[in-house]
Image (tube, rainbow, N blue to C red; front, side, top):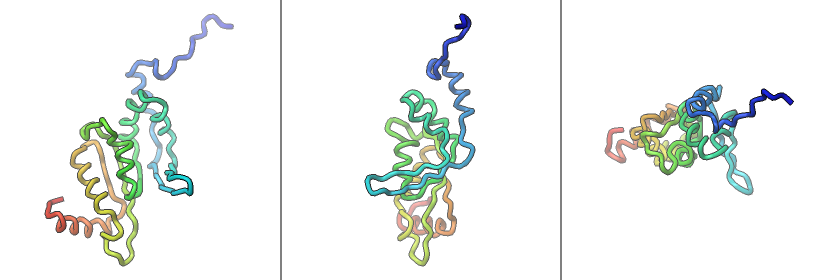
Length: 164
């Protein structure tokens, strides 16, 4: 045995400034695409290319410290129908004020073929995302298909008689 061996130090024992520097290095290299896949037993989400998301699941302290950094640095592509549950779980969970929320979402929308835009796109989900983007300056929301978006906005403006 060596007398000068330094015992290992856990991540949580490091000063916060050092942990924050480590968190800055722990970034997803690409956009993360979340795909909803229903199963017979339960609903599940297939997560692709999330190397570092597991750090948010280790313990409460790491989740509180790292999740806002992860959300600010990671672009998540998610289906329109599942944005509400994602936002409520990861971007704006209970206890987080909209001003503190962080996130970068690309919302995938279903293609529509002949049907009206309102029949294919959940308008309430879009309204909620627009409201979130107005309340939470640290949250960026983009939509992947512009072909349906302008007609939908026109429909929403007429329906709610409000500037969007």
